[in-house]
Length: 256
Image 1 (cartoon, rainbow, N blue to C red):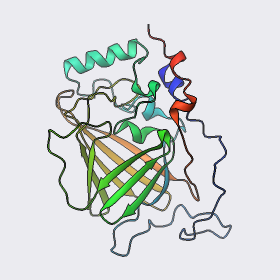
Image 2: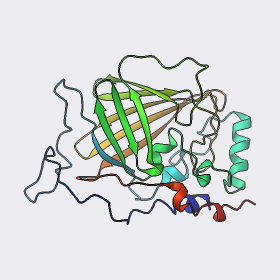
Image 3: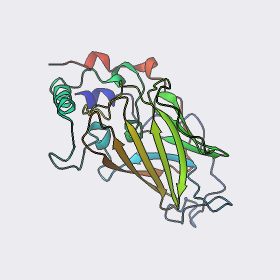
Image 4: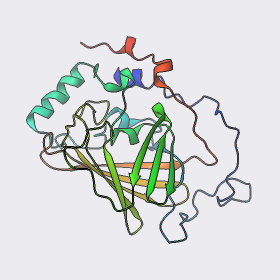
C-alpha cells in the first residue's frame, strides 16, 4: 500500500517544461540519437565526467529498490540488530504508514537514489552537485579535501558528503544523518550512526553503476551493500516537483 501511495506523484508521463535541446557534447549515431554505448567521457584532467541527467532503473522497469532496498537479497542476509528487525517487521505489518515521504519529508541516503525520477549531476571545482527532481532537493558532495564535520554537527536528513576519486570510481562518504529517515519504503531503519559509502562508476555514455555500502552499527551487525544502475536521459532536463502542492498520499496511508 505504501509503495502505491508514494508513487502517485512520481508519474513519468508529464510533458517536460523545457523543449528538447540537443547536447552538442554528446556522441551521436548516424540517425542523430545519442550513442549510449560510446566510451564514458572524461574531463581534461582524465577523471570521468559524470555530468548529465540520470535515472535509476532495473530490468523490470519498476522501482523495486524504492519499494524494498533489500530486493535481491536472500532471507536472513540483512544483518539486523534485534531491535531494528523488530521495528522493520512492525513497519511492514502496519503498511509503513509512518514513512516520512507520505508527509513530503525528505528521503535520506541511500533511499534518495532509488527513486525512479531524474537527477542531474554537475561537476565544478571542489564539488559535485546532485539536483534531484523528486521533491526539488539538492545534495553537495565536496571534493576540496575537507573532512566530514565533527560528530556533534547538526544532524541532517541527507547527511554531509565528501568525495574522492579511486581510479575511475567516484567514492562518496556520507555521515551526520538524523534518525528520522528510512532506508526505503519497506521500513529498514537507520540511526544517527549511519555512514553510507557510494561508488559511482560511469561505464559508458549511457550507463552508470552505483554500489552503496550501508554501515550503521546501531541498527545492523555489519555493513551491507546495495547495487544500483543509472541510465542517461539523453538531452533531458529537470522539471519542478513540489511534493506539498499535489500530495495525495496521506488519505491512502492506512495502518492496520
